[in-house]
Image 1 (cartoon, rainbow, N blue to C red):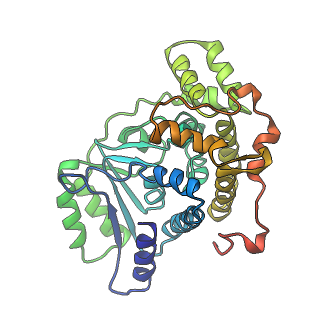
Image 2 (cartoon, rainbow, N blue to C red):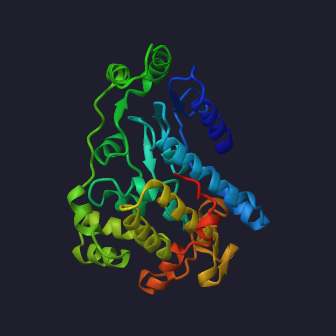
Length: 334
């Protein structure tokens, strides 16, 4: 699917007859209704156990696709109806117009499986207001349309019942300049459900040097929201939580191309954590996928098991590139 999307976008970029690109998911019984629900993680596990080099190719090509979408010269419109998670965020966050509906369920849930929010997550989450991007990355919280609009991960809300009509009308526009797209989208705009995010609390507690400090602050404060958030953080990989926070912090001052190159380095370390002498099944990423998607026992055995056992040196190793600059698989991203 990554290759099909990339080939189509590259061909359409040079095709004068193609004026704009729109992307949508497909429900089991109707158009729309599902965008991306993370079906790729089982492939990760199987490919690693087989020693399949396709795993390396997958991440290189996926991140290159994400970069292409963010820099696409023609209007690219994403209909983010239903579940929009992981790779679905990668093919929608670079859109010129990001449409959500009252059915949208959005998340970057990678830390649940011992991974990090990739597909450019360290770039677009770092640009959410305040600490909301770090909160979303670390908790793997699922948000709706109102929350997505509030933190800048969507542009407009449509009524999901009118999506087929909006899609057909979009195809009939005589022009796809900003004014035409704005007039079209205004016809289908609806008020999104109100955001329930406590942005003041998120900024207060997530503006810390590391995740251990965030959890300690939440636990000391108490209260329903603080206790629930601390519990969420404590169920995910302690190592990858700290790696993820460092990724978000670094991504805030990086270009998208550099951030994607950093992610490519990081994901190599996730499946082959050489600086900790952990490989294949011994990595937190493989253990997280096993517990969530393979055996489904939801009892991952993280290593180390607690945040206080994660050292700065453990985290730093994820940001050392396995390649010299001239040989980096994403060296050509501009």
